[in-house]
Length: 426
Image (cartoon, rainbow, N blue to C red; front, side, top):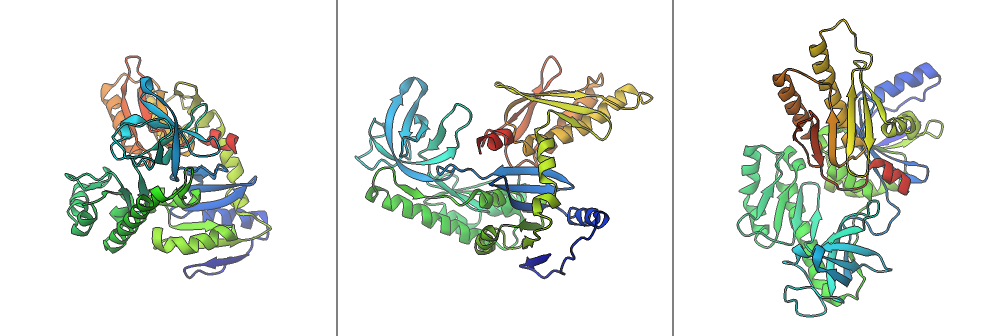
């Protein structure tokens, strides 16, 4: 097995039997966490794996109209009753544009008076890919995202620098008062991402903000010189966005067995994640997806029943309107105090639910039927426990409340299709 590292590493000896293979699998999975980029059934998958579990996964889309791309589209029609326009991005690829976002719109075929018309040529950016029977969504408020910041074209004079809500008060104050960022924020809106919280030196952050602002300015300058349906900005591959959207505190290595991906990452990692080592895995006898048992883990993520260590289990049922999750006591030991056992199983179930919401990318309204608890104090502890677990999710999720029927209501922002939809689509 030949292994190439960007950082120094001892060579890895190939496994010669099943026992050695199991030992090797345990050793490679015992670290903090890894991002794997593999090819499975002709699809590129990006995975964040820790403790033998998939925490997050994204499937590379074959669709050329990727989220983040910026186009000069043409308004096909307007629907005042739903406050939206339908924009053709070329080749009859129609996207949904809310009319509430016209304040900073760039229309190139006429002097824009604040009101959109049919046949207008407008600069738009894809923000959501098609989901089920819904079209892709676009916005007229353009932005470019990096590892540490997002730069938006719709500047905000009163608050030129905004900071991720997941960063502490001291960090928020440090970033919001950083003069170099505020200077860039005179013309653009700067949003500092959670990953910036790991920085001690602000140079990479300021450099990235300046670079993204320059790219955005160039796009706006050339828009009226391009023909309709032109793509003015093509986003990077999904696996690069996956790395950017993963918290650097969750992984300590990026591994791929795809030489073309490895070469691309060698170029961009010094910019987006300079402190994390990159490794090219090479072993034809034991492919990377076999080493990490990716196929069996994917099957587990698509199964409706999920077992807990305590003997309890979850039943996850996605429906058209919501996600239903039922917590069952299963095989827990009957000799235990019933109320205490219910509380213990519910706490464990909350951790597994938070993991599966993220790994399966389940979103919208989620209703969880936990095991009934008579103690209201324990119920409140369960709610707080779930809230704390959801704060670790890179996609916004929160507990709304407990319904009158004792169901926990959770919401999770829709960003992309569920894992099942991604796999079905490709």
